[in-house]
Length: 255
Image 1 (tube, one colour):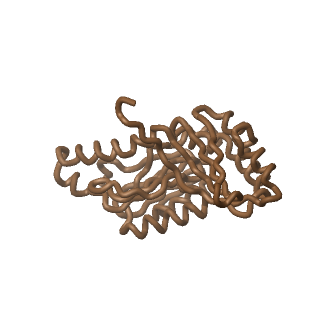
Image 2 (tube, one colour):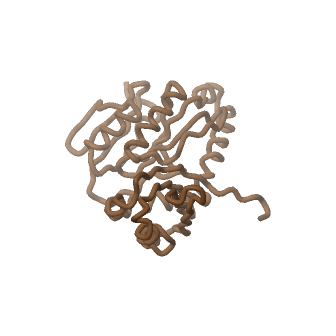
Image 3 (spheres, rainbow, N blue to C red):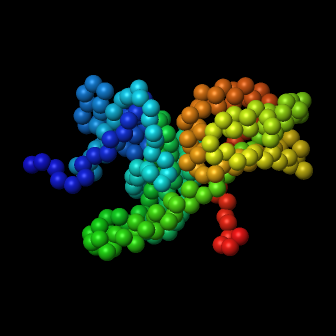
């Protein structure tokens, strides 16, 4: 019997090997069919597959609000996947509990920049069983939640700077430094703020401001090679660096 209803979503990818490994690791989806240049992956919970198509053409990735969503068995599993994503440097958004029916969710970026949402506690199944009238409020609430990602986006990094390299660090990370010059090549970059801890002078924060998360994600895709090269060049300036997360600026109505 032929399948009826939504059966697949097709994604262009640069490397089938990298993408199959990613969706196996983060979405428990594994190969169910393959032929030259094409792989179908599925979690086998329903007759649905993600069709990965290898291409050398330009890829326009799924970015928030556009994304793929998978449900997992627990909040702990969301946290586990996010920790893996931090280690792989592909966590796009830290976990957030939006309450029912949206649940506890986070965003992870695949090797080509497509966005994968992992979530626990979403109530899509019960909403669908309740018919379209039950589904619409849930869809609207999730859309309202994800819509915040289109607002002013901020990313924060923390650095412990080697005292003897402080001048070089300031030159690289200041408002006219190498990082700001790289960011300015991309549309949507606003500014970088550099903060120094008064109590611990070797501790610094950078606050990178973007017009939207889409703009930030597009920059990482378009300038990944230059970003990674500059990151390697600056490693010797610090004892330690770590991401302090991403945020959006809250603007009160009427302001």
